[in-house]
Length: 448
Image 1 (cartoon, helix red, strand yellow):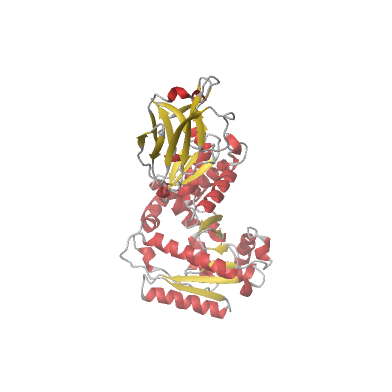
Image 2: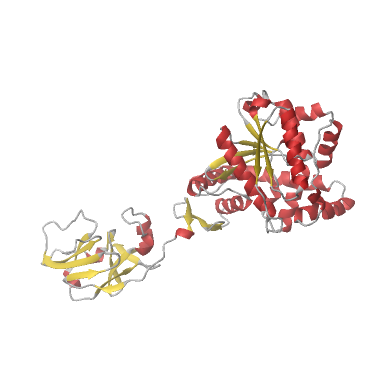
C-alpha cells in the first residue's frame, strides 16, 4: 500500500488550480462514513486556506434513528476539531416510503444548491469510490442501459438544478473501498459504519454483498475488468462527431453540452440525469428524430436541423371549428373573433399591408366559403401548380402564436387563405375582375 502522502499527491493532479490555490470555496458532502472522511482529510491537506474555503455539508435523514444521530455528532465533532464551517440539514424520510434513495439524493442536491447560492460557489465534492463506480455500471446493465450507462460514475460532471449549475467532483473514484477503509484506520481517521449497507433491501446492496463477491470467485479482478470496459466506452465516445446539420463536425460531448444548456434555459426546475444524456445522444447521433424526455418534455430535430424542446404539459388543445361564411356579412368565430366580407369594386391598389385583410377573385362569390381550424396534411397553392404544406408555412411565420389552431379559409376543399399569414395564388384577383370579395379577420371587434 502506497503511503497516504503519495496517494494524496496523485489525487491533487486532477484538482483545478483555483481550488488548490484557495481561490474558490468548495462544498464537501460529509456523511461521517469512511469515504467522505478520507475525502475531507485529503482536501484539508491539498488546498490553501482550507478552513476558509471548505464548507462541510451534512444531511440527517433520520432513517436509522440512533445511528443517524451518532453520524451527525461525529461530523460535528470533527468539524469543531478542524475548525471548519459546517452546514447541517435535517430532512426526515419515512423509512417505509418508496424510492428512499432517490428522495435522499434529491434532498442532498437541493441542499447543495442552496449552499452554492449562499457561499457563491458551484463546486461540490463527494466521496464516491471505485466500487461505487463499478456497482453503478452493473446496475445500469441489469436495468437495460445504453452505452451512457456503461460510463458509470464520472470523476467530474455538471448537473443543472432549478437553473443553477453544480459541478460535482469525485476525487476518490479511482480508489477501492477496502483501501479507503484501511487508510482511515491507519491514519486514525474516525468514521461511522452504516449498518443498513449490510441489508439487502436495495438492489445496490444485494449487488455489493452477494452478486459481485460470487463473480469475484471466478474472476478476482472483476472490478478492474468492468472499469476497463467503461474506459473503452468513454474513449470511443470522446472521438465521436456529429455528422449532420448545423452541429456537423463537432464532438458528441460538445453537442450534449449544447443541449444541456438549452434544456437548462427551457426547464429551470429540474436537474439532468443519465436518462437525459442518453436521449440527447440519440438525437445527436441520428438514432431518433424525437425523444420524450422525463417530466413531459419532448425534444425533436426540425427540418432545419435545429433542436427544439417542447413542453407537452402546456400543449394547447385543438378546438373544433367549421363555419360557413356569409357573403356579404359577418360570421362570429371563436374567442370574440369574426370574419367580415363585402362585395366591392376592384380597388386600384389590390395589395394590402394589413395581414388580416385580403381580396379574392369574384369567381368565389357563388361558391361556398367556410372557415375551419387547420388539419395535418393541409396544403396551399403558394406558387403556380406548386402546393406547400400549411405546417411549413406556419413554422416560418411570426404573425400567429397558436399555430396548432390557425384558421383556414377554404372553398370546396381548396385552401384560399391561412388567415393572417398567406393567401393562395389561385384566389388572387385577376385583371378582368370588376368586383372582388373583401375579407377581413377581426380579432377584437368593437361591439356597436
